[in-house]
Image 1 (cartoon, protein in one colour):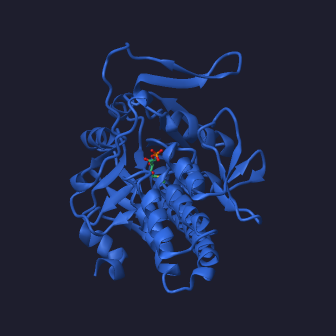
Image 2: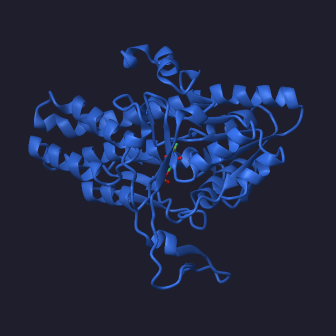
Length: 361
Ligand code: MRU
């Protein structure tokens, strides 16, 4: 996607062997990039959410493993690097998926060839992610087009967190259909949940949509239900950090409540995700490990002062406990459909098996 007319991806390798990422911890106020040169750099970037979003942390982990092998590509080093990277964030399955994919691509090679092969595999993961996210956009835009033809007015999409191009390598998952529809001339407006505690919606989704010229309005997380009751939401599209073979959708905390409100108001609720987000080993989403993050993300909030300084202030009384679980699971029965790179399917084993017969087997 473009920022001030310059095309960007969220991650790309440099000729010197380092990997460059957009530093998302500084957005929307400062656009800066950061160079990762070691395993520790990559692990730190994922852990501190300099990079975030399921597909992007997968891509970063893949490059992180490649960076780790530059000096030492022994079996022991591979195992250590995989362990360090896997421990950074437990919920998004893309991370473990990408690490296993790179490991499999280099396992049969002599140590001297492993780093280069790992970089090449990480590059392929990125290219595939771009193609898959674009395909998700093409399929999802047909849903928006159909609603627009029926309603003959602007379509209002509600989304939670950031599942746009910043969460992937390019295009995004939940926002890709919005971009494709917008670019095709379909009038679309996005209700952007601010997404406490880290405000990925207010900071990142609003930044992306604004940069692309898509009409949008930031709302507090609790407004969605009211808007649905008043006919102001035509559909909900969210991303996913892990979707089970049974169609349960794990995504940013708060997604479940949006799905409940959508069901109560007859609003279609879709999750958009590439194949790397599917966890074929799990049926029931309640088995997914939910990441517990620092309570300070709840007790404090960051922003820019009128003077231009980035500041963090406390919003909870000293001494009050805070709980910061980063994701929740929306049961498949509340999900209208899954938008994937292969098309739209029902959120259940049969629906997924029809799109991915080779995986379901
Ligand atoms: O904690 P984050 O910002 O990594 O959470 C991101 C989300 O929950 C996204 O919706 C999900 O990763 C899908 S990204 C295409």
